Image (cartoon, rainbow, N blue to C red; front, top):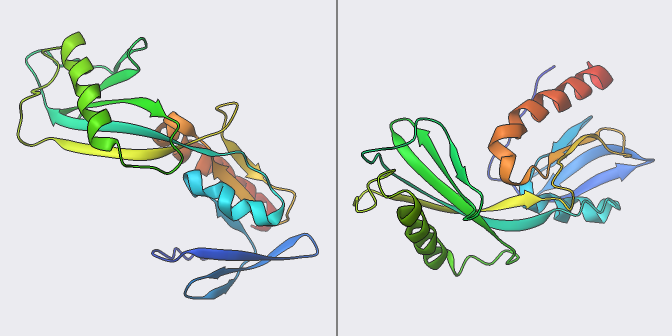
Length: 191
């Protein structure tokens, strides 16, 4: 069956009748739908709440900086649990990531938090990265965290509505595998 991916559209509401998904209204269209998968990260709860699904997904702010390798960059991912920092080799560069700030959707302290993370990283692993490099790639983003730290994956009580969200700090690690699980569930129900 064909699948349509629509980018740069905001979901306004989902049309549910008799316990079944019928359509999705966006800021640009109304789309008839047999099935939909909610995978909106920390914004999933906002879309699900009007449907009576209280997903308990919270935005937790995390940070990273990607830098050139240092003289002794680890070749495997290394986590310093005490500092809440991880070092990962990515395509010849090192990514330093960490922290979990419960700030709602606030991004105002990003520069301060990234600077603090880099201070700690340089103190605990001074040769892991070129901390003085002019070409640093900073990032700050919202991790969708559930109270149990387990993602919501699979069908909901609304026929045709599925979830693949709430992966927290393991989003990139888990989301593709759980996406396959949800796709299989949709295929079983509608294929």
